[in-house]
Amino acid sequence: MKKTPIWFIVSMLLAGASVAVGQQKPAANVPEQIDRFAAIALQPPPTPRPALVENPLPVLPAIELEATRSDPSVDFPHRLIMRTREEFQAALAELRKQYAPFLADYTPAAPVTRARVELDTFQFRMEEPEDLRDFSRVWRGEGAWQTVRIPDYRGPMGWWAGYYRKVLDIPASVWKQEAIVLHFGAVDYKCQVYINSRMVATHEGYFAPFEVEVTPYLRRDSENVLVVRIQNEAIMTGADSWIGGGVDGEKIYADVGPGWDDPVLGWHECPPGAGMWQKVYLEGRPKLAVTGLFVRPDLKRKTVEVRVEVDHRDNTNRDIDLSLSI
Image (cartoon, rainbow, N blue to C red; front, side, top):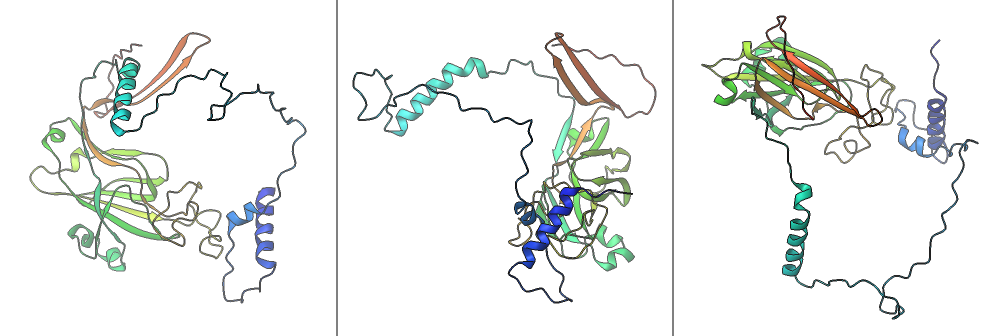
């Protein structure tokens, strides 16, 4: 039998109590809205554990601060008083010169083997019933679209779907690379990615980045249309504190949503909306490329652990050499 966490039961009981005290019970046909975060705030503080011991306050020496009525016998360091902007800029330039050797980047420049173009503007609209019967309407750009900048995050909460559409302008620096990869920093929640009417990738999640090679689907002699269909979901714990009603969905949700521009729900402590809320870009790169690097020093053993993730787009076995320098 699945166990319900005690803190969750207490939270819901307190939430119900906060509504019942001093308020009239809502009508039967009106869903009762419970603010879960208010319920958490109303919880009594937890009982201190015996193992926790409060540290005594340190005994600090008596320090006399500089003031107009200080003891004249106390020797305070001289402070430079700056009264004009020019004096401030001159002092700032002197400090920058003093600390410049410590802020310099002595890392040798790495050879540039990739070319990237940011996809920071899209057309967006909600899904319409006619789109389910004729998906080509989206490719033709039919419907009421609005221009949005990425990152873009929006409501409403619960089940809905929408489209991001963009005609790609691919520069020659990307075309000349061996492989062209479409990268998404993060999409909330479910999405399907289409290039020129072909679905090339699907993803479900919130935080994780993902990418797909789109080289076989791009056209050099005509326009290339990118469409991303996103689907929002109801969260697994319901949405009582936002929209009322015990609607449970599949969305595994962490309370760190960016929110959106709405005075009622959009700003309310990470509401579960949806959208492309991290960077999107096209990147031309070699077919054999490093896609991940993890470095962990071990000072006690005087060693360094290095993990390198290599992506090989040829889908064939191949021996490679990696050279590392520290």
